[in-house]
Length: 605
Image 1 (tube, rainbow, N blue to C red):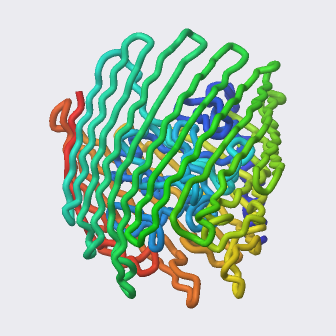
Image 2 (spheres, rainbow, N blue to C red):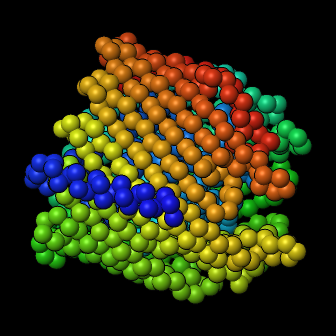
Image 3 (cartoon, rainbow, N blue to C red):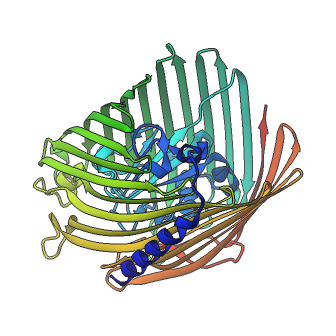
């Protein structure tokens, strides 16, 4: 508990010195860049959401030079880590990566962090995890990440956090076109194109992407093609309709770990479609969302599956009186699929979930916001789960705010865990309680902003295979994590800004892909037509293997990107990754590449 004694003393000191900071109108503190929707399902200042929320802008994503969204988030979100094993392609099955760890909490495969696209859940119907290769940067306007449980609003799989990818939308009348291409080491290629059109009340956005690489190891080639379409119509000043659909098709080879090479191939198709009817009134706003995800997986070892995940989300936020808001909603989900292998593949069941929830916020004395909520979730297999949440935020001034919350997170057992591999249809949900306090501060006319968070997590019912009964999963695990997260942004001049974050996680038991220390720092500078971006990442105490002998990794990565706006319509760039030529692994037995480069262009009109 030493870390928490230090944290509370620090918070007390901060609170006292901030009484010396000049007071100003609270409403002036709500800047556009601070408005988030993921933490409350309605637009609100990040300072008023008791949960810890990080926001990553489109420019952050673009300047990072990363092709995949999850790789980008690992640099901008404290306490967040994603496993990688190559230049492109996270892969599936044994040796697959793309596992997400939040505050030292993860599952194999990832089903503890919920991925959303415009608020719609994205996970595979049988295995319960997202397919990270399908998420590309060209479709995304910004990303919001809840660090910590958000089950009160989103249900299962949001046990340790939520990632909401908010997609691009054509906002101005006329046509906007963007084309891009890049080429780099190991015959790594990327091509993308987007087009947007808006006229009066109707808008449309479409994109196409193709990525491929030969890989830096033999038989590690990868290629993927993505297509995305989004259209919207403003019915009137109060109602708007939006529909979108996407498809991703990819093929990849995996040569296995270096100590036991074995060829393995995947042929995967993923798709989704969604429809949203949004309403905005003076005293109420909300949405009706209908979504359907589907996929087909064909693996070279003979495994084949089809799956689906469908649902309806309905919620409305009411402003009952001055300073109050009440959000009430219901979620209906159905997921499952078919597979040709496994101990019980011939009896896979479809799972149904239905939930009711309410979440309220009340402002007191213009500075204090009290938040509370309750969710009742019923699963057709294991029964009901009750999820409470309580939090508060205190805006001491326009520059200073404090937040605290206690929230429950849970994860339902997946179809795979209940019916496919080492199955047990009597499994109960994994559960955890998260307690945290935060301090948000802006200085120098909001040019300097930083956040400090301390958290403590207690979890139970972890689903594990426990020897000697290796043929059946059990609710046998517990965990206790605590730590601190720090993030900061400093706009030194109009053309020069730096940002960074640091997280320390004290984990009771070793967890794969959960660094003890992680630090990220990036600097971005504009000079005339030039843009320079330098970024670094330090990772310490990363477990890549636990049994039979634990293996940890420590490494320091340095990346650089230079871009030039040679014409109003044309931008060219070159990027070098791992400039220090570090030798390291994130997945055990899968060495990451040394220094590699790529260059390309973007054309926009």
